[in-house]
Image 1 (cartoon, rainbow, N blue to C red):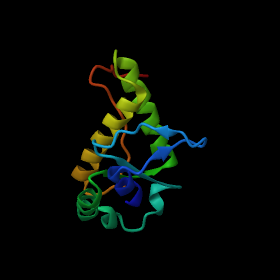
Image 2 (cartoon, rainbow, N blue to C red; image 1 turned 90 degrees about the vertical axis):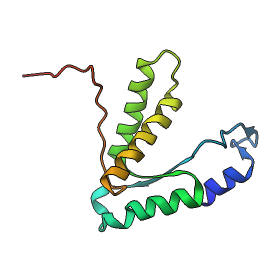
Image 3 (spheres, one colour; image 1 turned 135 degrees about the vertical axis):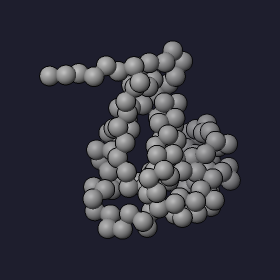
Image 4 (cartoon, rainbow, N blue to C red; image 1 turned 45 degrees about the vertical axis):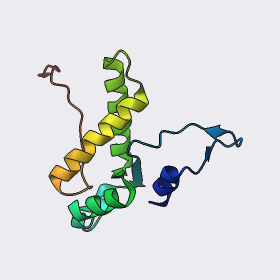
Length: 127
């Protein structure tokens, strides 16, 4: 939460060389907590609707709880979405996908979810 608050308050963001980076500060931020495996979370309700609402109220951003395989799926989904667009960058696609994922988490009532991207025009493969 502190990082999002710092970002919103205008604290400079720099690269390792000390150069100031331009960072989007107006749109909601994504806070990603990376864990080894979602199955290690004992009580999924701890990261339910109340947690999501409190986090968003405190930061104006979205919380995401991801394990390594879910992070890989997010990156792959962003690449696939960007590849289908003409002006969509991978970062834009990642932001979009994470927002859609946050909606799915709210519907599920917990941040402890796995999401798989499917396009409506994909044909089923039989075999």
